[in-house]
Image (tube, rainbow, N blue to C red; front, side, top):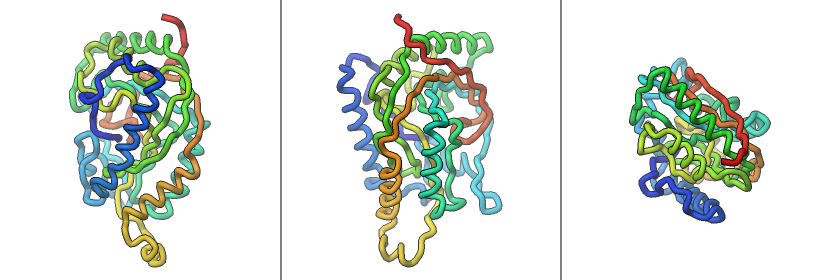
Length: 284
């Protein structure tokens, strides 16, 4: 539930000096921030998600309540994600709900705060499936564990929150110390040679999905007069959230190898099996 693939534009590489990785992320986030203005609120017309799925593929309206559609992933998606602990995810989730829930009520899906995560690299995804036997899955998990042992915990700061044209509320982060996401993805690429060449995210990106808007906001006539332009109203909500949570700091110390037995299971509270590895910061 994030942005369109841009790995072809930014190939996996660690040749860029570490001091420029944050600048690269900033440029990427700047571009993402303008997505809503450039394309409008596509989610209000029931448009596509960023992963080539329609909103009706992943959500249903039942008794006036938005519920996720759990479709079996065959074969299961195999994702590698960094995990954000509840110490940070819970207060962020509370802030998101406090600002957006009064206006969207049932027309919004909130990411489960117990599995806030940063998508890093897929050994198999729903666009390009790479089937694997049980033995091959175990081998992949062991390879990811070996990668985790040489990665250093990341100290990160929430740079900004943005709302995309597809309705996804994203937290975009910067790294202040530890192994950079570009390096993490490169190491996972080397450890998982059978993985799809085309990955889902820019290698520099470090993002967390907080929520997805699925309908029009319910606003008073007074607020409608104040914000006759709906995009302006969305920007106002995002600004309020940024004022509250941008600058949040966290430490990320776990890499998960996750089998998703339902499509977008991590995002939609579907069936998963997670192997959790601590970042060991051991020397190669």
